[in-house]
Amino acid sequence: MSESVPSTRPAPPRAYRWLVLVFISLAMFGNYYVYDCIGPLAPLLSRNGFSDSSIGLLQAIYSFPNIVMVLIGGFIIDRIGTKKSTLLFGAICFIGAVVTAWPEQPVLAPLGLAVNGLLSVAGSIFGATSVPPVVAVMAAGRLLFGLGAESLIVAVTTAIARWFKGKELSFAFGINLTISRLGSLGAQVSPSWAGSAYTTWQGPLVLSVGFGAFCIIGAVLYWLLESNASRRYALGDAGKTDKVVFRDLLGFGRSYWFIVLLCVTFYSGIFPFQTFAQKYFIDTRQTSAELASWLVGMLTVFAMIGTPSFGALVDRIGKRASLMFLGAALLIPVYAIIGYTNISLYLPMAMMGIAFSLIPAVMWPSVAYVVEERRLGTAYGLMTMIQNIGLFGFNLLVGVLNDQAKAGPANPSGYHAGMVWAFSGLGFAALLFAFLLRRSETGPRAHGLETIKA
Image 1: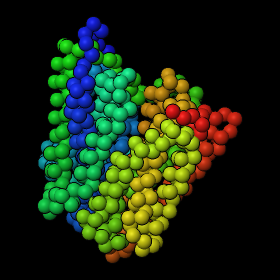
Image 2: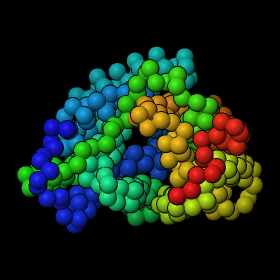
Image 3: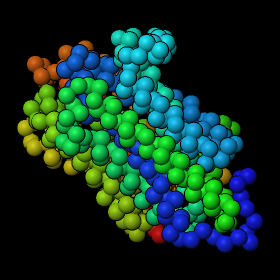
Image 4: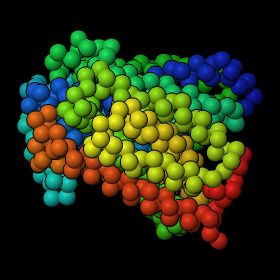
């Protein structure tokens, strides 16, 4: 990169590197908070006349630009460097949060028209239809936020690789992810600690703007630290970003594609479920908003504790494909338990939390075992693309299914099609792909997922 300096300079002090990590992770903290602010807001939006289709759109449209951005985000970061790209994408995230929070400004009306035009194109594929102007502008804000958010993640990942490559890289990524998920947890349980903001549907969105400011604050602090360090210390090169090289696509084997299919079915069964979960629990189990928020927040708590723990375990025992099969199997009964029994919600959410900790801890590193190193950027980029297609489609689909069945407190069974059958179907699909992966990795063409240990 153009920011590299002669190696005669000393390396940055260890404390300086960790200060950089904390500040750049603040940008991710704000990013994760804004992403997860829609789920706890869904019950209030519903009471104010928003359909489930509209709520699903607000979450789905985040993923739409990332189907494309993963192709070009890495190029932008390589072109302008991590300092500028982190600030650029952080600013886009913040602007997206602002547009979402104040959708009734007349100057933003053209954005709503553009979104409804997009929906008219997507309607034949995903069942989307035009939405009221306020919802359309909010969706434009979420789209703008999504445009910056995933690229911000790549920029931060690249920066961490630059500062920690050859040192405490895995631990640094773990700390970054923990700080990021604190943002998710803060948003998910916000009805408990920020109940006064939930008197109007706009209040929580305004609150998210405040947290979204950390996307810029963290980027600016990182800029200052790296600018100072570039004059005083020798900095490493950034890692390669996730870019898709189309000529490499035909070179991936069966195990890679089974991992990709497991990824899209598994995550499509988790994140779109979170979009509607709090509203679902309130309407069908009569939980309070505070309890519903903590039930969803359990997933993040489990992930913060369980993901690094399962990662350490798999390094010791191997059995990666078997553990992914176990995680997929845990997910299948969750939706039926919630929809058709009176068993405490803590049990199915704990089961989902274990699966949400286990599969990602094993799945993402497993790609490095089944794909050549020179193709990893393409492999991860393609995997992220397909994942976002699934998140986009299933957030829209479940919202439409809920509306068609008139799901709500007066008709709790209306949730069965979207929140039970659709997600259970994804669970069975994930289990199938995990089974096929394990069969592939216990056969003659195995890549070592079951046998390699640290």
